[in-house]
Image 1 (spheres, rainbow over the protein chains, first blue to last red):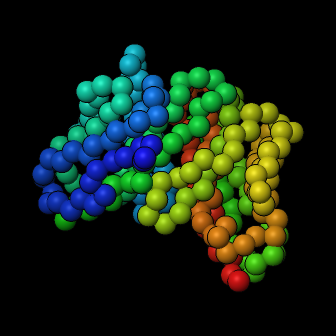
Image 2: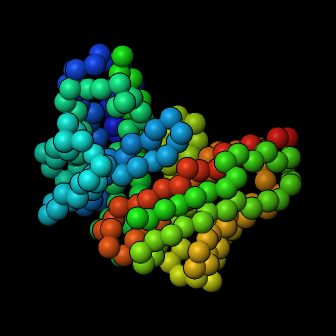
Length: 114
Length: 111
């Protein structure tokens, strides 16, 4: 069973479109995240979310919004896509417990904006 | 601002040739330093967490160490299957669960 799964694996779209990436975890974790990995392989946090709190990296444009229908899901919605949004997006989850905060990552969604 | 710098960017080793990867960091109060392994087309996979200077952790051919300014990932007698990108990340005291990652070291081990 895949612990953190995200779909689609590849997403090719035109500038200006709106798209969503879905993420589900079956680990029973209470915190989920979205990370962006650019062409130079830097992983940057976009959002951290649990039942109580959404933490947003202030550098993330407000065109990006996380949506969580329940504890096991955190989807990423992107409005008005731009060329610079092309990257690999990773979903991750963890326990919110000190000393056990390692992240479990999904396999990534490669987004290409044309 | 928290910063993580990894060196070298790429490292080629012959099978059995031991070496070390470096992770230098500046953080406003370290809560934890993490090492991950990332294979092409996959998400990062957790290796170690280190919490305080002087701490060491081992797993098979890998050993991670931590000082107040940097961490090393020592690879002893590597095998081709150790080829991957190794990522270092720090968690600051005031950053909740969010990690700041370095750019990674791409390790290639030739048979």
